[in-house]
Image (cartoon, rainbow, N blue to C red; front, top):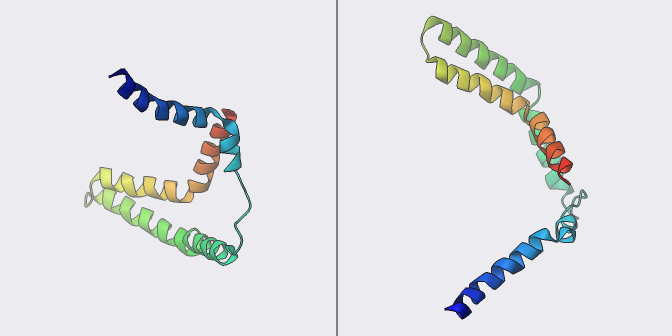
Length: 109
């Protein structure tokens, strides 16, 4: 029984030691793009610009105005209307939300 417990505890202790060792975590912290990823990075940046650009802003304004009008006239539940509005805040504020989370995470180091 004791031998069985030791065989189960040893991998857990090894994993804990690996998590505590900070050099393993710093090895994963690389800000450079991998070789050959230029096309993918530019495609993702184009997609981000399209989704957060002028067209998306106009669509979000129209959606918030339409949902607000439907909420005021009683055609839509206030909860669903608030969900649309909060979703727009999250969509357009995602960059600042992530920056805040990253700055909070770096304070711990």
